[in-house]
Length: 440
Image (tube, rainbow, N blue to C red; front, side, top):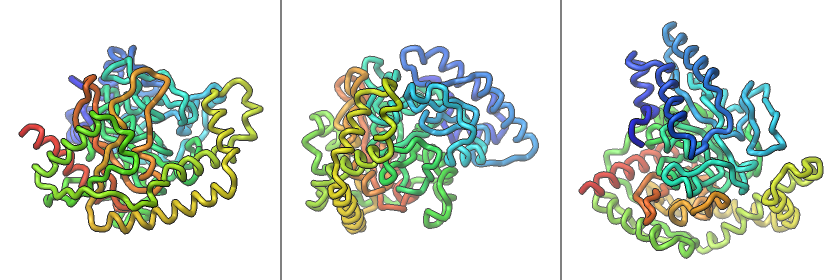
């Protein structure tokens, strides 16, 4: 959006050169929030004085010669992350007075890299279905998506250069697509989830929402366990699009009937534009076993939620929503045999997925069924993201156009498991290719 403070890499470059301070950047962010956040409501907790103190501390560190990869960068943090000394309410009255003593590992890694917690962004209740107060910056009558609602809206509105979120089905990719920004979900397990409100130990991921692929990669690099990624994380921090056009698989998935006509048309147009830009795009479908992927996602997520929270519902009394109660009760109804079968299917799909993507640099597919839905109660359908979450594959969404209501549409780029740097490069190429072909 116009006159927004700089993105991640631009801001870091300017701070390193001395033409911008972290305090100046933070004041710009706070000023923009004061002007624009009224109808958006992206923040669950924002302490301006604390943010300015953190920025001033980072500026002092720079004068002593510190040269950290994220030095001085203010970040939005989804309110399911534990943050030492800062409220972490999980989008629920259950945690209304919860102020953690320690931070999640992902947060401590970002802080060790020089970033700081600017504020906590709104999440749906426990990162599930019950929506929070946040509205879409493009049209406040529409949802920003969930569950990383505030993180996507804050980045899209230019309140912060980047924000972090979580994804169990589609909670980074979908809101980023709805809000017209970049969402990046790394491969499963690359970023530790300890200190994050847990839903499903099999499916929970941490991701980044930013304004460009390179910005998202640079932030993610500081959270990833270096030895977990072949070649380490340095290549992610210095990401550039590959010089050679990628070979892409255009995959509609078994869920294609859920996509509305505008999303289908946008996907077809994206395929055409990428071909015009020089990519080889092969239209192909997933193996038949993927027809059952959504049933596996549902069984795994619900059973693991029930195992963790069924015995807590009575103590939480009337503080939780009917939607969350339905989640837990639905999980109780998933038998141990169904759960075990879903895990077996997941293992088989991961293997088949690795074989399927072997000949391609990445898959392209829709990130959502269409534009952000009207209203705030329904945060959108995560189906187009959930297959890739089940497989633990790296995935991004990049802006690809607008729908009939002027709201953003996106293109999802999915790569091979643990080939995150390669996937990011392919996504960066696609973003540039779509832009060039669009201008042409």
